[in-house]
Length: 388
Ligand code: ADP
Image (cartoon, rainbow, N blue to C red; front, side, top):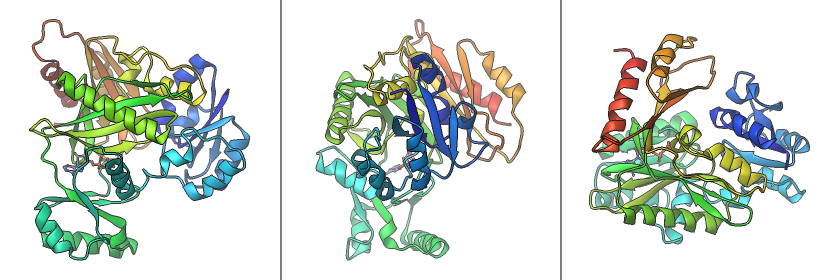
């Protein structure tokens, strides 16, 4: 497999570039805009939205195998291509149960994996009593196309719920069948694990990390998470069960909640490389991006272990509408010892947009807590990045 087609040309595809070069693989990207990050590193680009299956047909003619950096594809249309012999890795059947958050929850529950209590809004007769049973706050989620907290709402009372549903339905002419309601999990921490599965069925997992979200958007990741060996084993077992069940080939990201009583629940599955694994670019022998390409190309998997005591990754999120490239802030951040700045080359900044990230490798020899040390460094980075 020498030419890999990637559906989506954002930063996740852009970060495959170094690994592609190392492995002697060419990337052909399908993405709508000439300004998308991966256009600059792609051998060739098919300019089209990710859900345009006729563009994917053209992409298929230019490569040996197709993978995803964005899962908001039209699976039904793609399955026609798969029947004609186009190779998708992971295969389309591995994505099918995941693209709708309600179907995803059902799939995980049916596998016996722990998930928050949930129901589809159109499935129950008496929504009010069901919610009373869950208790407020509840979490309302769009079943499809949610990311970075878009489409996730923490709701405190009925009036807000009704308001929210009518707002969403009038603006997009949607109906209740497009929503999932679930218990609000008063988590103590959020965790994530990146796992890869090869064509032969070998699975490797990266260190379990702590992720920190603000307004439902990932701000920081600390590797490794300070959790018990039993919790690590439990989370690794969840990854194995899921990847084996779906016969995944490639990287998956699994987001989890850790409750105060120590119980772990699965929140969400990303069927691709994931923000919680960006630390691996600088902190691991084999990054999640290289690992993904290895799996997709049928190569043996690489070593996912941390090569340092730990790492903290901080997202550089847009905080204004601007065309700045933030040179001086990036420069200051790059001067932090052991810092590696990754700038995605986006031409436009908007509030909340992921513009880049920085990973700082931690040498914890004299530190009592890696998490506290990581948090301190994250604070330093954010005080340089965000205006006071
Ligand atoms: P997205 O697909 O937009 O990333 P998620 O389901 O991952 O949506 O939710 C984003 C964030 O919202 C989570 O990381 C978490 O902080 C919060 N969140 C989501 N679901 C719940 C829940 N059931 N209970 C508490 N917080 C939640």
